[in-house]
Length: 550
Image 1 (tube, rainbow, N blue to C red):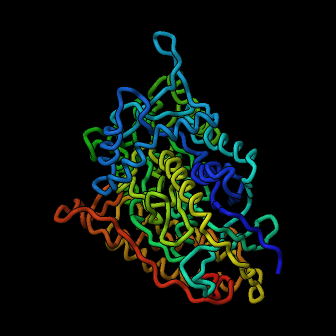
Image 2 (cartoon, rainbow, N blue to C red; image 1 turned 30 degrees about the vertical axis):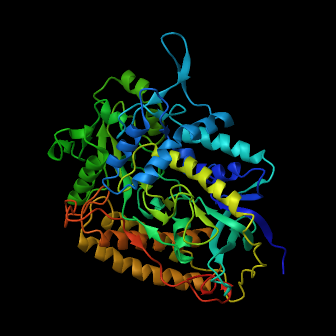
Image 3 (cartoon, rainbow, N blue to C red; image 1 turned 90 degrees about the vertical axis):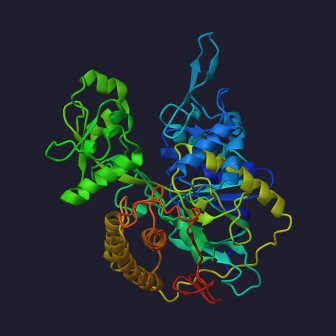
């Protein structure tokens, strides 16, 4: 048997959540941090806004709690909200101690303080930021610290295939033992042993045709946890940003809401404005209303996008207020000082995920989930701006503290079965993967997007059932690739989203259905919790054959 890598803690994901756990464990455990590509390519680095925390004397913990509960439309867990908000200031101090360069300003008396901004849903200025690239500043700082920290190893170009558990190996108990991991550079799957495993894989917005997320946001952690026997909750609540630049190469570029705030108008292809028909506030209506209005017009007319026009403002005004947006649009051939720019809503944030407690523990002993992959109870039915990075930081600290205490009693994992590829071949038809990937994201956008109906959801369920069968058959016969693994996870997560949306027969927060357009106030709001089938029986650790799947 080949020598297997072994660590105290295996962290899958290299964003703020994963690196936060690793750094908090420094000196107390050996830690490996896996990244699917370059470590700085995840969602954290793309976060523009900032981190919400009570830092101003005029603000209060109670106000932040109240604002979060209001945004969550009745589904936030108040105990969790309070837990996170109360620990916010300490999380910011930790980042400052690490050297994150947050933006400062001078007061009237010449003192220097950190600049706080205010975003949607917040009643006070409480968002600390690093210009308009906060995530990049945090990611860069955490990654630099991790690389110089003894006992922390950052491993790029590694794609987790599946968790290895006692159940899958026919051993007693329900505990995680490690994971099978595809080394993309060497083209082989290796077994990595660990006393504890942390899922910090981010969200699943790539399940949709249009998204603000990076390519790696394919729901891997949610899918792996589900296959390992963990509950998943509130997957119907997918947050959409109203205006993402519509261009085949633009991918994830958002057009800031400030463009509409400064007078930008949303237009149909023939130049007709339409927002006034949906809300008296027009373009300044809340994000969910604007996104639903755009989605309605795209479906009604069968069009690919709408247009955002601020060209009636002076060119110098536009260049001064929106230098980044202006420059980026020019790269794609659009001059926003002279013409409207094409936009579509984009999937932005996964509010549901793997069910965890206040220590980030999942249903499987030794398995933790931190960040967007987790359902903690913080966000409820809608995420309030800049609470996401806060959640990553607070639960990274909570998970690290619990892991440090648990390591002394966590058994050393046994030698794991090697990945078996004796019954598979290289695929000669990767078009199957690319076609299914495209089909999945298109029908999720059309049928399980911003506005839903029972008929659309049922149509999507029939299609995803067919895809799941086809993908699993393909997965069982050919050697795994990163694209195949991501497609497999996306299809499973799509199924979880559809099932959750069908189960919620009301409109609440981010879930809006024309068949039930109002909240159901006849009973207290409840989470949508999905329970996986019985864990798989023991067998060979080969994808598609026993222990490698479920």
